[in-house]
Length: 206
Picture (cartoon, rainbow, N blue to C red):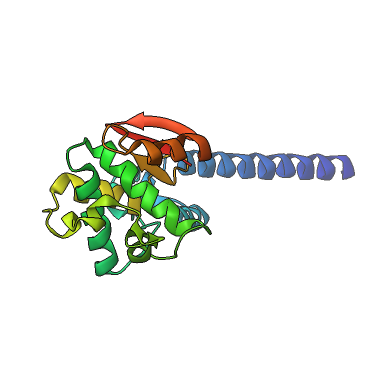
């Protein structure tokens, strides 16, 4: 009689275990077949966290992640007031208005490199109008051409690139057009400075 009771309990236990296994299997299959819109709460939290961290991600209706390039913000590396930017554009136009956009960018780079250097003044205006022993650093300042030029769109684009941190000058602090410069000045460039490269008729030094 006891053996029959024990056997009955074993059968009941087996049936109970089999039922649990079946229920777990059905639940697992249901989770695997859930659409993207029925994600679990922890997955939603993770997605939200990723979105807030990356700042450029979105979620499509289907649940797929997409990049929204319109949300990417470009921050300026240099911040100057309107007067400073206008002076920078004018000196670039006066010095390199006949060159390609990279040639104009290089002149803007030199001005900004000087602003950053301890050897020169701390503002665009002071750098552009700096005099040494009564001699202007830039010929368009000495002859007044800086005020007569009309700033072109190409120059404005080059200056914007420079203000946004694009620098192709290899740290240049000086430039000169050899065919227009006097021999004495170019001799000083050649003996006192490090030659870097030439672009658009300008030779660059540091």
